[in-house]
Length: 291
Image 1 (cartoon, rainbow, N blue to C red):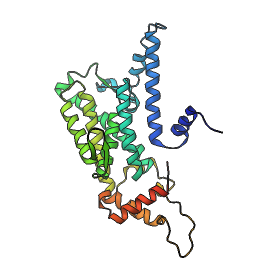
Image 2 (cartoon, rainbow, N blue to C red):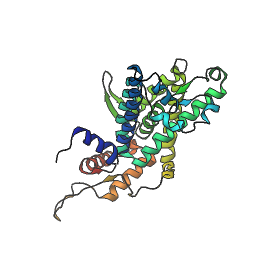
Image 3 (tube, rainbow, N blue to C red):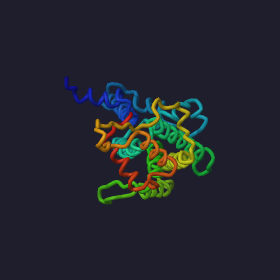
């Protein structure tokens, strides 16, 4: 029986096991909820500022003494957007770079980088707004929402692992991930002097975490193991067609794939030989993604 569009979206977000779709869905649902509450107030159904009340329990307050009474906001803020374009840009970058991330790393690693990157961004935001005098004066009444720190962690993780991986961008053509990440960093550093200084500081925290995480992973230290080991050794599975003894297999065996993925984790995608890249490309086309 053919499923409806809504049931298909629900399945992808909450039943498929794909962490990327799940996190995008959570961000969208929180956005819809906040704006529905705002609509109720605008229509005069109630005089209470419902959306503002809800945001007060979700956003990350800058004064640390306010945050200690709402410690969960260090997590909830990274799934909360109020403006449409804020949501749209964050989710597009999360989708594009998240797909690349999951092509080479595990679901567990994606979840860890998103959450830990957001937490590091929150920690840097709190430190700066409570220790640096020029920001400390503005801390009362300042709060932060948005998944940008987490998205920055995903972007910089992908760019550090695959610096020469090329994506095609409108108006810019083919751009390597290392240059894209560098542009993000320069913009955020310059934006500290602007109106969204707190957001830019959090972005830098997430970016720094993404870079360090991959460097540690390449050194053999996978911090994501704190979330538990995956039930399967690798994200990539290979499906082989039946062949006769005289025929060559269409795709390499799992041992070859594991060896190539280990090399990527240790030295990055650019360290692969042309033959290894072709082997991985063939396997990714023939195989199935484990989400």
